[in-house]
Length: 151
Ligand SMILES: [Zn+2]
Image 1 (cartoon, protein in one colour):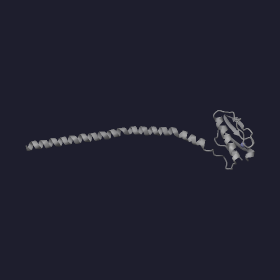
Image 2: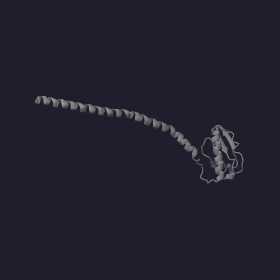
Image 3: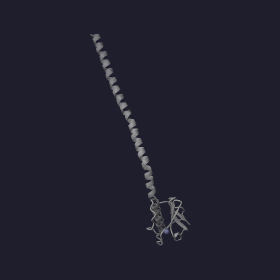
Image 4: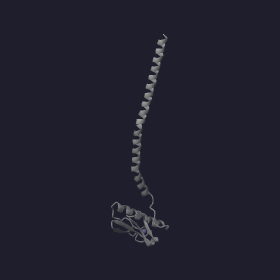
């Protein structure tokens, strides 16, 4: 009887151990499964990074389009000169898009058409009466994305 009891206890112990072991294995498998998913997260993360990397130049170019171009020189300009530079800026954008007809634009000071020079693949658009703006030259070229105001 005692022996039998001992056997039972041993059996119980073994059964208990086996149960624990399977539980442990299951939990380990669960952990493994969780671990196995991590590469997927990395792939998704990498995809996001790639998407962002592709968007960054777009965002930057949008910002470039929206920000007013910095001017060479520190001279303060009046609103007419600003409007004139705006025109030059628009013309250069048209030229960059392959549109060379700039007849729609004129200096806001006297309505004269702009001067267009094409040299070595670079277009240079200048105000016909830069002196009226207080400069010897007011121009924008397709080579440099900055309006030039030459005193
Ligand atoms: Zn002008």
